[in-house]
Image 1: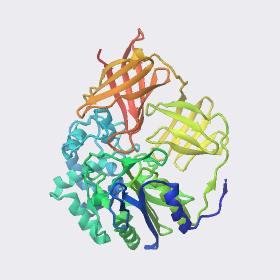
Image 2: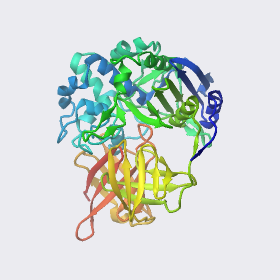
Image 3: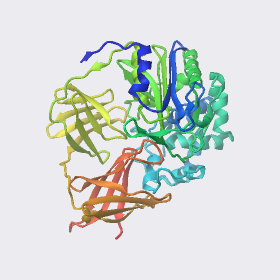
Image 4: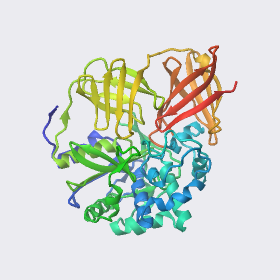
Length: 520
């Protein structure tokens, strides 16, 4: 690969509002624990003409997970102190229960409860009160892999921590935040905003794009532990400075959060205690992103270089890409110019381990892999090989070998012949999932097929169902209670000896292995 020249940090900051267009945002870069560049631009509310400032508090969303884990470690010393209390919160779970440590590393194998709200019939805008989460998680009967063997992002891992803490010592999570992190770090205005209907400081989150226009997002969910913290630029600046100040303390919270972890087979894991581990040009980073409809956030810390970057938007441009853009400038790295993509990559495959479709969409210099929660960008690494820092695809005869470091998956994908049209009438009908008690109705109308989920949260919206291959379909959910939505669900049809459809297997990356039996 060739490279362009490194972009000066000041120039990178100037480009943010244009490269990641939207109503407003904030960004800060620290070196050696001190601010070297910061910016607040645009508007916190377009309707009220309210400017975005350094003091405007924005939802940091899932960045909250590391605060939850840090407060837990500071209060109890180790997650094992809570293990004995976990069975009461997962009473229906069959098979081995995860350890609290495995939950903190997203190795529990539990399905994500926000993804499951889709099959439980939720609509994107409905209210999801505090009382809904714990009963919904308590009803979980099966995971989609054995605890400790793999990775799968799961919000309920962290949603259970506040309840475990309260059971252990009667204390509220917000008190631990103040005592163990916000107070010591000097995060003077950070707060817990569990009810997303009431954002702090009158800030508005916006859906839409620069081409479609921006409109206020309508959120009604309640979250705590997995998300919920609101913080300003100055709050996040204080947090990053505190991380640097405690870098040499072996008992420092962030040092403990970011320590290396492994899977049960000994393979290294790339997620620990609410922190993602990745690299940029050979430099190790720890950090996390956050998303709520209308908001995006991302922070990164390069410990060896002592550089931190935080970006937060009140719109849905990629804060992750923006933060990497700034981090690259702060590190003095040039953006690499990828190799041309060789022909023949456009294809689709079935993953036997997860039951999900993997689709490849090539462009001139990159290939988009549609498999997990969102498109992943892969580059030509060698003849017959596509790769990123975490995913490697290699042609092996009529199969495609996939290695996913973060997920601890090493498997051969099976080719799936494309099928643009199929007999929707054959699968139309009512299906029931015994595990969740929810229902799925498939309706075929003049060649179009739609799905309707219903369950404990109501009846959802009609979702399009697209033919993907022989007896294989995709259900696409583009909007859901959490953001981003879980995306594509792979639907695999079961037939009896006569060819009649008797059931379905359903799964998305965050919630796999759901079984539906036909009831009509």
